[in-house]
Length: 275
Image (tube, rainbow, N blue to C red; front, side, top):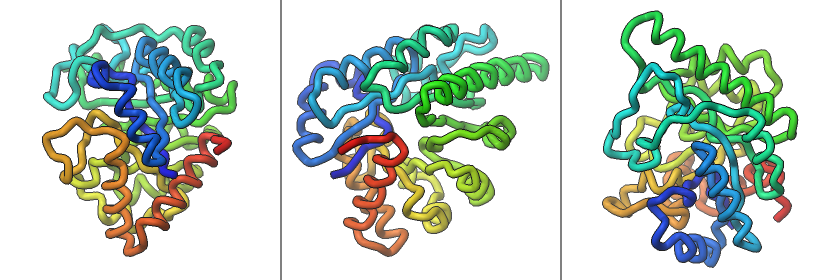
């Protein structure tokens, strides 16, 4: 068994063949957690998970890039399509809390901080960051209230993220990790897991992969994004998670089987999956 701990089969990229994509993954022993990025995609993740007897779980949350701040207009970067360009959303904690109580929900995410797109001007930038921090703290409160792990998104914001979590007891994973050794050591000291996906093929991650203990790694696809080179030009999907495992095994000079088995155990533990 393999667990793709971060997928987006709830996105419109899979509207035409979602069931087929999920079934071929499950047939290969690949289970998945679909992460929400807005209320609508969070709700969709639950609906998809509820339609399968096994192998599909949901995480719910408001991605920071979708937070309505009134300060920045998000542009299409060519990689993130319809969902990234959708109308921004004001965060309603009570609505997300209620959604998170569903039995199919195994995490709060993806949530966190993202300073990639930001307004001009010092005052606006600080307000923009403050609004993201406030919502992230509310998501931490939901996770703690329901005893759920966090799936944390962090882009160009590691210093602020660390300032928020360093004195808070949390459990979770740094999704799509792009930090360096300094950030890695901090997150490991908090007991957090490190999520690795197809970005390791284009980002200089070898030093980090060598350094992070195998029992703290989670594998993910972030599909439909970050397709591994072996499937270049194709839409990413859970079946391609094997390429990420292969690359980790090569870098750490261990077997595919060892990476597969340990990362599956890690996912079961963090997300409390009774499999």
